Length: 190
Image (cartoon, rainbow, N blue to C red; front, side, top):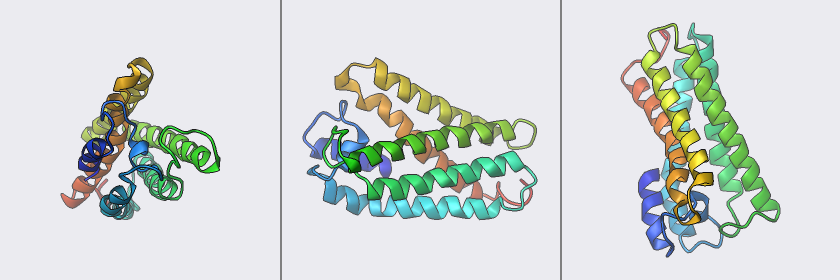
């Protein structure tokens, strides 16, 4: 849902999707704001329900680092969902004003929690049967790093391409956790 929203709204917004940041799509002044809110109304709550179900499943886990990593990832999902809802950009690309500063603070917290959680999950899975989950967490971190490096290295007209790596890495890992839970790979045996 997030991917379709991001790709579809880049065209509706009237700017090149290659240059546009995801936050620009949900800015208060964006022509796509209302439709973005309508379509993302499912993505946010579903992501929260999924990660909270994962937290419940791993509550009695013997693998403390994996559990801590998942709890940090859940905290990131909450900060992201609540923070970006409360503090959308007021105008695309505008870093001034309280609302926009808070948007940047939320972004910093989301990035820090994402990286910390995924690294902790990766480390926690090195000596148990969850190495595949750890490798997927590492892949998500690498995608986030490539996104961060790419936004600084790419020309301005292509900023949006590497920026999506970071956005989709976190959403994709949340989906991985939900699928693992659904398939019975998470729980007390963890």
